[in-house]
Image (tube, rainbow, N blue to C red; front, side, top):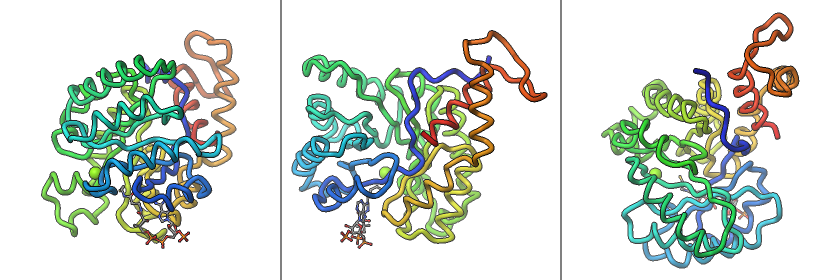
Length: 293
Ligand code: COA
Ligand code: MG
């Protein structure tokens, strides 16, 4: 069996900038900062006392984004007192986000909860465009349940690996968390699960704010492994991510040639410049081209 073809077009998510939903100033500034996707945050960047106000501000920001701005909203985690209200409000918004990021996903049940709540809320709002889901994997329980998590909902668009909560969940010290190799098993697990499901794999935020050597080493590692993009928490990191996750021109040309050669859905394998290509090559080519368009 080959890698499944994506059930929907990929969106470019090389640089995903997290923007606190409680900051009107940052929400206003965010669309001009060059990120492929903005992740308007209702979860950990927002204090408990500010949750309702942040939700209102995020709904207003969605309504006033320049056209063409790709927006996700990170809702609060399932089982918190805010998650269901966040989802209902977003599904009913005149400008709904294209996806919600669901944090601390631990089980297929978490995905089913979000899926059915969105089903009902979208039906009530008369909305025809289903909101996608990006599942943030940031606990050891979630990591161990990846196969069930990716199989649950057709809304799934990406898996995101979250380091800060995962370090806490594992009992990993700050010194341990700074060692890139220590994250390799978790990165591979998320990448394999995402690819098996035909969705994107996104590397979560690095906690430094600068575009420095450590940040670039972490981003380069993720790009080399095959991740589609990474979160930035400060505007200074966006340009580096865009550059590091943009495939080189020769790879883009090759991907276009692969899709051209397979155009018309040629069954099975065909030859291209002395190389065998098939549907697996086409899936890889579509994924790669999503990063440049
Ligand atoms: N999105 C949009 N704008 C941002 C931003 C972000 N994530 N981070 C900083 N900015 C803006 C600032 O408002 C400032 O604007 P100005 O020049 O018009 O005053 C400019 O970029 C430079 O910011 P700077 O002064 O260097 O940083 P700061 O002290 O204002 O902010 C943080 C530092 C950490 C508070 C901020 O970057 C932040 O909140 N990041 C996101 C945190 C988050 O989302 N966490 C949850 C996911 S892990
Ligand atoms: Mg987290």
